[in-house]
Each structure stands twice: as C-alpha cells, then as structure tokens.
Length: 169
Image (tube, rainbow, N blue to C red; front, top):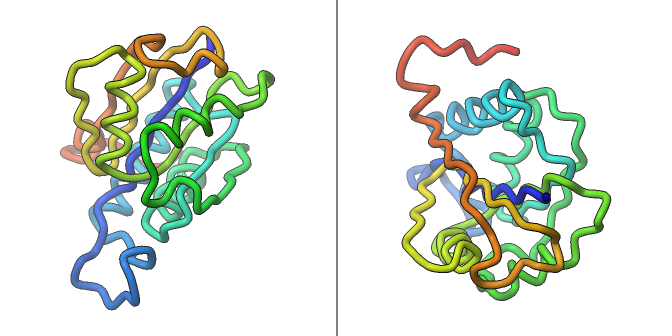
C-alpha cells in the first residue's frame, strides 16, 4: 500500500511586500502551523519518503519548516509543475513516483489539492484548508485514478496549535 499526503501550504502573509503571487511568504500563524504539522507527522510515524513542493515561496516554506521541525530525513524536490496546475497534472506527478517510495507528500495549493483528493477517493467534497495534511492510500502509484484511493486521515494544524502542544522534538 502506498500513502499519498497532500499538504496545502500554510497561511500566507497578504500584508507582506511581495512581487507576485508566486513570491508571497507565510505569516507567523502559517509558520507555526507548518511546524506543528511537521512535528505531528514525525510523532505519528507518517514522515514522507519523498516530498515534492510547488515552487511558490509559501509552499516551499511550508515544506521546509515541516521537515526541519519534524527532523525528517527527506529530500524535498521543488517544481514549477505543482504551481497553478490542474488535478489531472497532479495525478500524472503521482503516477511518475518511483515504486521504492512508500509515502509521498505533495505540497501545493487550492483548489487543486481538494479537487485531486476528491477525484482519488471517488467523489465527495474534501476541503483542504491552509496547513492541512490529507492522506490517501493507493494500491500503487500507477493506480492514481478516479475512485482508486481511500481517505486515511486528515490533520489540521489547529489540532496542535490551539493549546499547550510542545512544538519541540
């Protein structure tokens, strides 16, 4: 069984100075959320074997903060292919994943993440909010087709940031 984890970039800073949508940074809440999800995945033995992130600054920052805080020993690949893309293109990225990867994380954007997740589980509405991680189990990467996945879990950063959760590893 393969596990796909969609991670939507954390909350971005609309008040910061940025040249384009692509260069919009995370805000403080977003940085906290990214760290919390990274640590939660580490503590629950859900660290990805491979991470592919959109090239947008907010997605890259989410991926690197999660990995650093969770002490993941995972290579993070940055690609323009996941920025401003379609659900169909995302399914192609999944299908191209090498078989030796058991747990793949894709870090990107709405509405593509929710659409792709809904397609993979065969319909229904999956709303992936900022900073959320959603896991879908597949029998194999080549089987990333409509209705072939099963929703395994969804984690929202507020589960870990609205209280006294220790964000240190």
